[in-house]
Length: 117
Length: 112
Image 1 (cartoon, rainbow over the protein chains, first blue to last red):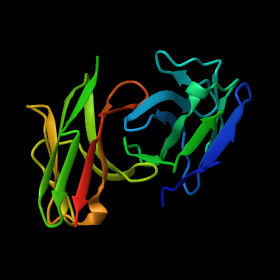
Image 2: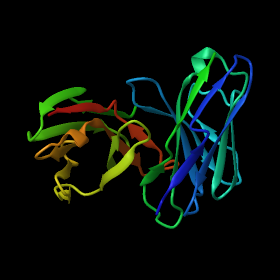
Image 3: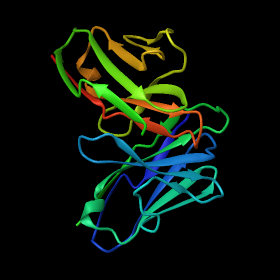
């Protein structure tokens, strides 16, 4: 149980284009999902908290117009990197809290490696 | 500012050795401390600790929390090459959206 999937697992795009990453909770309902990015040899940095049916809450320094987050259902959140630049190249990971567990335990997706050329 | 610090940042040992990884924190409204193991992809959950002094154990891995001294340790006994990974410590707070604050991670390498 508690499986989170991400799609795509790897994407290469050209500078200036937009990329959408999907995060799905497969066997549980997630009222809250989190989006992280991770640079090589660094830890996870929280970008934003995504709540089902409401606007995402962004961490300081994260541009909300550049990283668009939509949490349209209890099992799906999407992150769209708009007008991507090479410095956006990173490993993006989502996590989800199980609504019915009510704990701080977060289940992570397998991550999406974005390369912007 | 909330802070989670792990040490060492990197550790190389031989198979069969026992290792201890450290995590100290300064977080307002502490709720829980979590340990994750990260190999090539996303982190996998190991332990969640909320109470001081109670050891959690899973096979060769164990962890304990000291809320007075604000730290936790993760022990791995009889290490195997499959234990090679980055071990992440994260702290959850009572308030807010239950966000986790992550430490930098400890990169553990087990040599045969």
